Structure formats: structure tokens, C-alpha cells
Image (tube, rainbow, N blue to C red):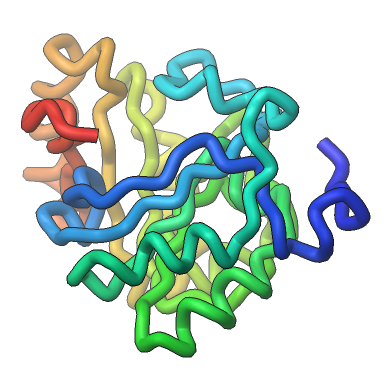
Length: 209
């Protein structure tokens, strides 16, 4: 997917799938309130993706970033999470520079396949075997979140852990549709390798966005 800077006015507009206030359901900040900005557009093609409706950016409204920021200001939590789709498809400099002026923390969830733009307080890297991250993401990731669909995926996770910085938090996340089948060996793995943690999609258990 090409970056269409001319259409999106250098990141001042983005194809917005949805934005909403909720509780973070995955990774290190599970349980924290945050304002989520989900952009449309992704060409990674994960077969287990639970937001396939986000893949085509042309079906999502091109939205002025200032409108999103204005809505986010109405909520008490001072954190935004930018996700997708694949957010690194777009220039996020304008978005992050403006929300940070208001004392808001910026978090991003990305597969790391495109160059990172924007200023981030927290980077969650979710590397995919079939479309690997750019090398530049490994030293700057605050956490990696590896999706585990089958037991063999644990070997991919081990390889990813060797690439990140020493302070990066390591998470294994059971793929939702396979949860009951794979959670036993994920639990066993973490018990044997305690530097890893388990990330559950807690928002799905809570039945919230």
C-alpha cells in the first residue's frame, strides 16, 4: 500500500475506521482507560485478523485529525492508542505532535512493516512471520506481542525476543479463535520461560470494544 501524502494532506487527515473511549484489553496496559483511534488500511493479510473490515482504506471516511483530537479531549484518560489496520501506513507526525501538546500519552500498536512516523511514549510491536517488521523497530519497541496460533509459533517468538532491546517486555497472545486449544501450552511455556508474559484479549471477555 502506497502512502498517499497528497490525498491525506501530510497526515492532517486519515481514513478513520472508528475512534472510541474504552479499556485497553491487550498487552502491558491491559485494564487502563484510553482513547482508541483505529485507522483503515492494511495489507499485511493476517488470516486470523478480527478486523478484516479495516483492510480497505477507501471505504473509511477521510477524517480531519483535529476533529478526532477534539473528541478525545472530552474524556478523562490522558492516553491515546493508535491502531488499525496498520497505522504506520500513514504519516502520524501531525496527530502525535498535537495530542502531546495537551499532555496526552501516545501509544501505537503496529506490525512494523512501514517506517515509523510520529512521537510515541509506548510502542507495541506485533511481528508477523509472513510480513516481517523493519529492523528499525526492534531496538525501540517497548513491548512485543506475538500472536500464537499453533505451538510452532513459539519458536518464532523466541527468535523475536533475541532482536529487541533488553528492556522490551515480552508477551504471547493466544489467537482468539484457537484460545481453548492453545492456552495450555502457552501457559506451560511461560512457566518454563518466565521472562515472557501472557496477553489475553481481555476486552473480548469483558464484551467491550
